[in-house]
Image 1 (tube, rainbow, N blue to C red):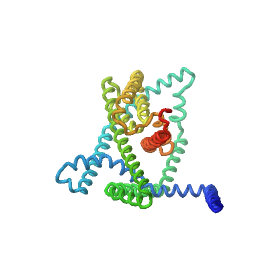
Image 2 (cartoon, rainbow, N blue to C red):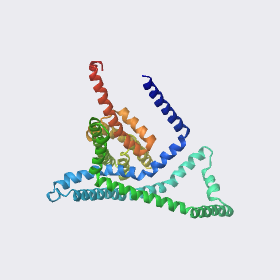
Image 3 (cartoon, helix red, strand yellow):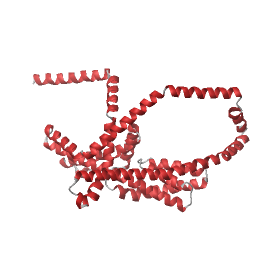
Length: 378
């Protein structure tokens, strides 16, 4: 008994010493962690990109090319063809969106520039009524510069240009580092996609070697559920964004609102960001329409609220199904935590991750309540 107590005290003492050392060198340890994270960035991004690409790639590999008799026995060829088709589809989507948006953005900027003088005139008239002379301010501060002031401004511009040339080596080095990381990310992505079964077998083999069979079986169940949840979430989120963009395109076309294509595509892209993305699209769209017709901007906001209610109550549950199975309050919490830790990527990551944790915790709670015979209490 005394020996066990001594061992317990020894373990507690070692833990306290380790905690003290960590607290004393927390800055150095955290800096080392961040440096290690930076080194592993290509692998982490490559793994994430491989997981996303695997969703459409698996569909083409099994559902499309897997049904072609000459390709059934050629797994490597089917995988190569599936990857090529997936990358081609992504490139096609990017090209279509870019070709649609660039002319719309150009015409929108030109329209805003054409409306700007009239808007400044109205602002000048309004300020003039309040006792402020905007025209005189612009004339004296911008247009009314003396030659000496112009020469001074030009010398500042040249000074900034020379500094840019001096520091260009740093820019080139940064571009080289980014390009190298991008190449490593692609290499990790392709390697994981082409050897995912072998990697899974290696992890399982190591797990069964060092863990009990029961625990490893449970870990495999959790990994399988996590994979299904993430894949369903990505598929559903993309499909929902497309449906939302089409609905806005049709509704805005019916009511003959301006910037139909630009706003519809922008809302569809923003809808990929859970909860807040579509509202960002609404604010931007309303501001663009406001410069053309304030009443139509109000109508656009009303239309957005109606479509959001339709999408949230009818479309979203059918599209997402039981992929998430997460109450709204936990979805909002996951978005807030994800945004605070990792930004937009964190929002997309934390919703399915929270769903997995919520499902596991719910199973644990229900099992414990059943074991204690307290089903009637809750």
